[in-house]
Amino acid sequence: MKRALLVTLFLMSPPAIAEEDPGGTLNPLEMGLGKVMQNIREGKPDMTTCATGYYITKSGRHALARELFETCAAAGWTGAMTWMSQLDNNGLGGEYDPDAAAEWDRRAADAGDPVGKFNYGLDLMRGHGVARDDVLGRQYVDQAAREGLKIAKRLQAADYDLDEVTPDADNWKYAPLF
Image 1 (cartoon, helix red, strand yellow):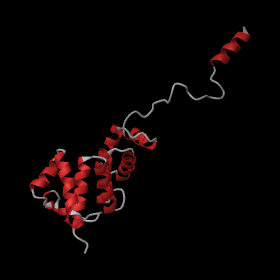
Image 2 (cartoon, rainbow, N blue to C red):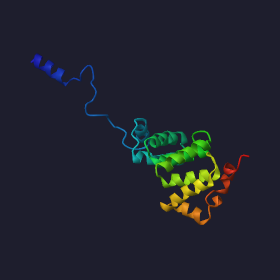
Image 3 (cartoon, rainbow, N blue to C red):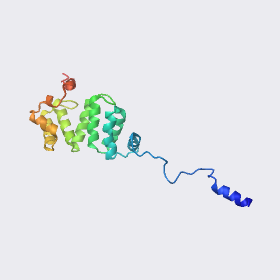
Image 4 (cartoon, helix red, strand yellow):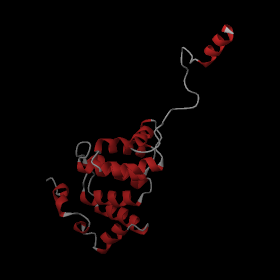
């Protein structure tokens, strides 16, 4: 009887050295900002994760947004490229860098994104972050308009008057430096 009791207690007691639970992680991150950033840090930039960057940057967490958008842009998500341009063009989560902003716009445009085409067209027409080229800039805007981008059509209708699409609060940014 004593032997049976010892065997029963041995079988019921936890092992002295715990092994990893083969059933998975207890309470894994399933949603929320923690899961989004886990996906980014694990190199899993899916559409939903990348789209969450909008809410992150709108909440003022620009360094996190930059981390997310850089990973998503590297994976080819053109919306993330245009957001990186916005961050660089406004010094959010990093230095104000018009050259980097124009490069992000160019990358998005080259990848076929209408917003990237429009923004890069504006960069070229202003000479902001890239050498000024009004003719090429209009070509990019025209491509975006042909693809249905309403703001590009609006700029065309205004005979490419950049004041039509630029808040006057940003005029200091686009003034010639010489």
